[in-house]
Image (cartoon, rainbow, N blue to C red; front, side):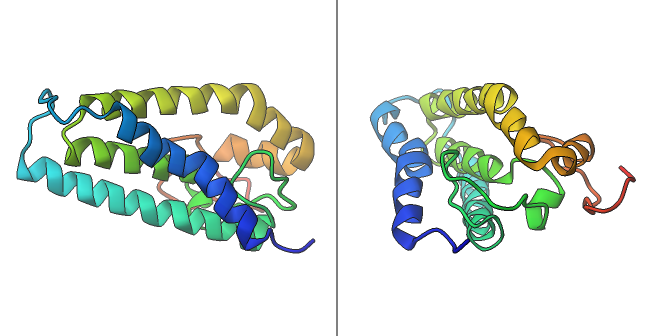
Length: 169
């Protein structure tokens, strides 16, 4: 199956991560909210987190296109289970990247509203993964996904990379 079209990637990026990291924060951010201190350390930390999250996000989009043969969207069916790159350390590096972008934004803008939104985003995704995505991946990829799920954590990265054909944790 061919890779997803460029237009499909742009559409899905706009619908999901762009809305989550740009549109929603734009509407909820209060420039007069000073509950998160405005310090140079927090701004630098925010830039580092946002940059790291952006890199992780775009790298995972690349992997979805080139290995999974789909887009980042849940409605875009992937043809192959991705267990390379950051997926060797945690099951949801794309969401981790988006979460890092949101936390970075909250720190740069010293916005409690965006930080709360980051927490809501994390909770929504965790529930979605438990109820919908993980059961669907088990159904589609069977024992390969079950083995991967058993050895690779959902959120907190494992230090040693997962190897698809190994049974060691």
